[in-house]
Image (tube, rainbow, N blue to C red; front, side):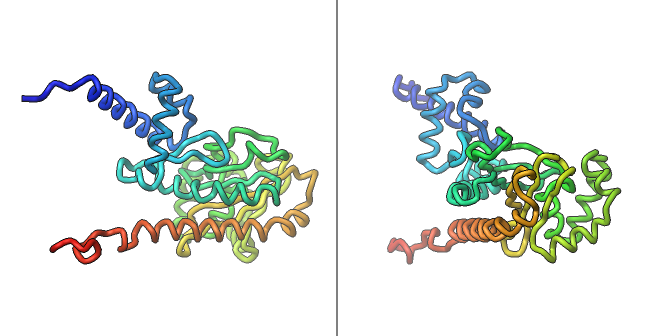
Amino acid sequence: MLKRRSNADQGGVRALVRGLAVLREVNLLGEARPGEIATRLDLPRPTVYRLLQTLEEEGFVVFSSTNNRVRVTRLAASLGDGSAATSALCQAAGPLFSEYLPKIVWPLDLSVYESAAMVIQETTHGRSPLSVDRGMIGYRMPILGTSAGRAYLAFISDEERGLIVEHIRRLAVPEDLSFLEAIDLNDLLADIRAKGYAIREAGEFRPSTSSIAVPVKLDGVTIACVSIIWIRSALSIKEATTRYVKPLMEIAERLAASLGQSVADDESPDLLETPESTGADP
């Protein structure tokens, strides 16, 4: 026979249910603002903030260091198949972007490939005094019309590249399809690989801006791209590459190193308890 719950127990159960609902919502959305979660779940904002604070203290979510959005962490990966891997990338990118922003000033983006588009996952657009855009997280960019997409295509395997190009053709993505028909893709990508970075000049995607992107590689596999965007009337391509290619590559290398260390820590045998390591009797 079940025991009747006390008022305290009922309050605890309700808090747990609400906390799980909040965590599920963050996992579903990939990233969200507390107010957005409160609206979707029809919960008071102060309640959602308290629940998110608790989840953050326990390591299940993390607030972006560049905006007021929250994401699940690697610790929450076992709770669903959401965006834990991308969250790990963003967690590593946030502090690095904050460190480099005063030196670079122009906006930085971290983007990943997703279904014939490069999707911005972390950015300094909201904090850069030179940004002409806001609210760029989650923004979907064309592949061939952007430096991030070109860098990604250039540094992935031939097999993956072929599948992506075929996907673009099948979807008939206007921005990419017209570009694909106007260039020699093999020559473009070979030039990018030789230089180590991709550029976007005037008249492509957004005529008022230009950009440079470099790949982020983990164990030789390209997993994302880091870009810098500037108003093209302020800098020539030559000036921008001279100033910013080196720090962009530094960011990409440090991001990969940080992510690699995170993976290594998760897989460390020191985290496994055995009779020998704990001193317990077998």
